[in-house]
Length: 498
Image 1: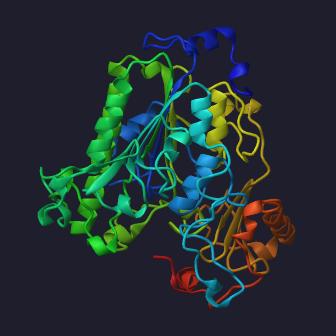
Image 2: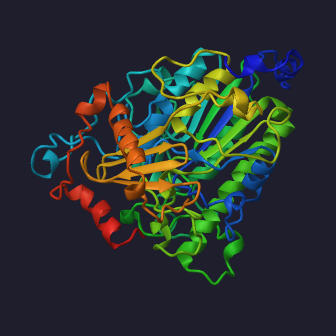
Image 3: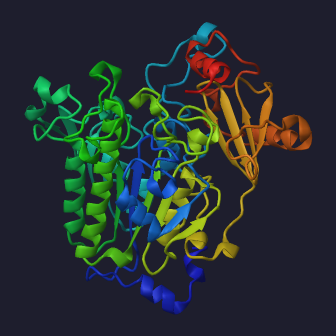
């Protein structure tokens, strides 16, 4: 291991003291991955209106990263890259939709009915498998894997000893579900069938609220005694909104502390959902302390992509992207720069900020490092353990980060302070921004730095080279105006991203 091996013998002995009466010598790991939480969605990242005291405390007791990026700007593509450790130029999934049948045909030939068999389930080692093979007891809660159904038995095969949640992305839009899956068994909730449970935003004490259920299941899992360390992946559906077919109102048991605010009803529901989830994070942290495993558990908190303000009708009340441009579905900073908090008492300095640029596909290598095993050879990620342990001088450097999204045929590169963004095709112009002076990407300075633009153009080619999945995710040379699915992106660029 590149990072852990550098710690002194005394510090390493401290790491190995498992407070739950075991001697496995490895830290427990919890990954909390939110769904559409933007860079400015938490108090510790500048949010002024939505109350998140428990997550803010997590940041105060750990390390807050200012330059962490989701693996992509939509959930399916982001989660796939994260669990496989592949950046979007090598990833098997690069959008929320299956690939086009043939991009050379009119309107791209339409979309494939399903993801190709060599894409899903993944044919490379996944994050769950890495941790299970490292001797961890593994569990997943919430929005399972990338939100694409797997056949019975496949979840266990992909590294999860225990799992409970929604098998499909669309199912996770419903906070009072009719069914979920638990270890390949379908669980139904008759109490969620009545109309007064399924439709209203404020449900009260009726029915089964999915996030309460997942939190309870997670707390029960933590109580189980084992001679193995545990790895928990809590893929919460918060703060994703509901499907339009289910109505605009996000469902919550109560409105929380926001009943007297002079806000819209949808804004109150959105804030109440996040604050209730913040309470669940508080319960998890309290449980770790009660079980006396707090000192030997490292908690990661992040988001799968940037903010989505359509859930409260595009108001600017919450400023969910903070100072950043764009949002979900765009490769500007607002679509991919997201919160990342890491807490590990006694090992990570409390209240410290880091500006290290890293991304979701680095989590696999980081977890492997913490587990004292080699990361799979296929991963594009690097371990950030040296940075976590205040040994930034030992941190492995990287030249650039790369993203790609089929929606709008978008590409982006971050190279040091420089950020390049391109829409439409490989011969379309590249926009260039200096993030050190222009975090909001307001000033395109490509004309002033042609040599930087040329370098980024070469990197956009290099980042895709050698991927067997490129045949499914082709990029045209120029913008295709007959690709109807891309018109949302192009129209938003022209008319302003709401």
